Structures are given as C-alpha cells and as structure tokens.
Length: 480
Image 1 (cartoon, rainbow, N blue to C red):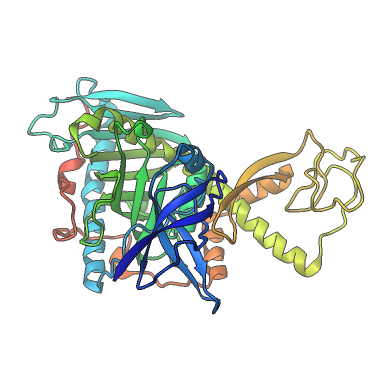
Image 2: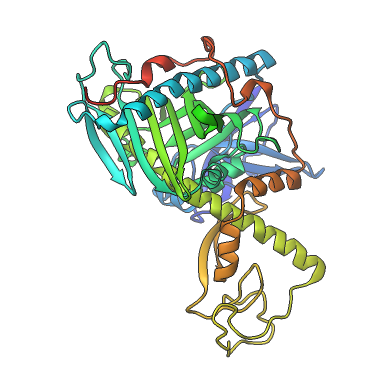
C-alpha cells in the first residue's frame, strides 16, 4: 500500500537550500524529521539507510518548488533520473510482438528508402517541403500544410512530417557505437555528448547487443524533451514512451545500412506524468557509408506533440533533435577513448606507469619545470602512453564518466597526437565486443531481429494512437 509524508530533507546537493518534500514509499512510515538527501527536482532518487544497514530508495516530489528550482536542475542535469513508472512486466509474447513491430517498420521504410535513392536526381519539391534547418551537410525539411495529395505515400495523416537528408564525415561503426545505449548510464553518457533529451529511463530490454551483433538492440525507453519557454508555465515539456531499435540490415548488392528507429508505444503501466504532456512520434533514419569517411543520411519523422498550439514550437525543436545524429560518430570516438583509458588504468595498477623521458613524445621538445610527484596528475602527460606532451602538441578532450554515486561527471583529459589517432581509428566493432566481454553480459543473437527481417502486421494492443508505418514515409518526396 502506497503512503506518503512530508519531511524536511537535508540541504539540496545542487544549491544547498533546505527542501520540504513529499516522500512516497511502500508500507513504510518515516519520522517527519528523518533527514533525506535530495535534489531540487520534480522526481529524484533519495536513499535512507536503516540501522540494519539496508538501503532503500524513494521517489520524492517537491511540495513547493522554490526560486532555486530551475537553477538547481541545471546544475544537477547530470544526475540520473529515476524510472517514473512501475515495472512493465512484459511477457515473452509482448516481446515478440514488439520485435515484429520493429521489423515491419524497418522493412516498410526500406522500400521507401530504395525509391528515394532511385529518384533523388529529381531534387526536392520546394512547393511541398520547407527547409527548416541546415548544418554540416544535413538538411531538415518540414512538410508545408495542405501540400500533400491523397495519392502521395509520404504523409503524416495530418501530423507534422519531418524529412532529413545529406552527408556527413564519419564511419558507420563509430556512429552506431555512439548511438547504442541499452542502460540508463549509457543513455546519460550519450546525452552528455549529444544533448538529445533532458530526462530518460530504460523501461525494458527486449534485444540486447551480442558478440555477433554488438550494435543490434531493441529497448523500451522513456524520454523527456525540453520545450522552449517551459519555465514560464505557458507550455509543458513533452515526454515519450517508445521502442528504440538499432542495428544493421543488408540492402541491395549486400550493402550495409545502419538504422535507428524510435516509435511510440503505450502500456497500461506508462500513464501520463504530472507537468508533462505525452507526445507520439515515429522516426526512422538510415545511414550508409558512401566514402572512406563519408556517411549519407535519410531520415523521416512524423510526430504528434500533443496539442495544436505547441506544434510551431515542438516540431522545429524535434527537427533540431535530428541534428543530434551529427554527434553520434563523435560520441562513439569519445566512448572508445574512455574504454582505452579504463584499460590503461587497470594495466597501470598492475604493472605501474612507465617512467618516460622529460621530452614531448610528439615533437621531442624538452619538458621543464615539472615538480617531483606530479606524474600521473600533470596535465602535460598523455593519459594513454604516459608520455610528456608540450603545450603546443597536447590534445585535450572532455570525456564523460559515471561516478559511483550515479553522478555524471565530465573531465578534460590530455592525449598525444599518436595515441588519439590510434584510438579513434580503432574498430568500433572490436571495442564494442571487448566492452561486452568485460561486462560479462554475453547474449546470443536473436532470431527475431536478424538482418533479413520480414514484414508483419505489427501490433495493435501496445501501439499508441500514431499513424501506421506504411503511412508515414514513402516514395513521393521528390518533385514530379
């Protein structure tokens, strides 16, 4: 039985202000003076340790948010967000239906992608598509109202439709390594590089990456996206419950296509949350390697942001989220650096760090003025080879790490040119497999999510009120 009480918490870890908070818990009675560590946030995790040494976690709702609320939320944005729902408890049959749904969406839109590739020389029909944003070779278009005819296949059934095309530097494996996030920790690390959502939770894992397919995953997630002016209480943030599918499929002539699918679903245990409006979306992006270091994007999204008034704000904002894909390859490279740092740190604990000469490992310039005992702490040493680097040669990258208290921290780390070049050019597939082996979570490939997926009728019971996949993306995006 759920009950609650109002307690005086300890000072907020973000802004040091004392909080009055309503603590919701099960079959437990807390003394009103019980100190509970918390944050200035609408829903956070707070822990209480009993005399027996048992720790519990309770969701906290602020009774009366104070003036420091917005400031503090920004300060502790790296804090992991508690799952706002109870356990979904999906059955094996539910999992199979979700896999069939993902497969049908991917295959339906693969045909539209093929049509686009065959007809893209015709160009973009500017009478129908309005250029919304353009960045680094990627263009985002929004469908003009009332321009789609009944005979056209690309349609959002009256909902805003977004279309993205273009090319970008990078490699597919790096992009997928940066994109795949099957845990809340990995989602927050990705968000620190990409900034694609403000809140998130992993609700259920249907397909986990395996050694054979380290980038193939199907996860049920929740995310919250900040809407401009939400702090004024004139509008509310939008949140989404959706399946997130990643992986590779084989296109014609056996060419690899990377895909990323996000499609809204609905469950009895994912009700609407306070101070948020539940939106619906269906988005799919295909990436193809068209050069040694060049990728091509084809992506579409149809969305219902929940209310006509907010469309002018939410739709361009969602189009901006598409540009987050530009950072996935960079995120993958940073994750490779983080993995190698962990590996080198473990080796140095066993064997000790090598004693390098006091010269720059890149240009051989003598390094002077180093104090005894600063080895390993100095900003002028490469943290992979432990060699010295001069100010002109050192390369600094800001990497994200998950601390033991679940805080996400970012630290500037110094590298030499040779090490950063070697690591960033490493195979992301090999690193992903090494991370799986190191974690001990080894899964076999799932027959329901193979490269040659088959089309199905989808799933009705778990779908939200979105238009079907066959309606939202297709052939007639080119001018006649």
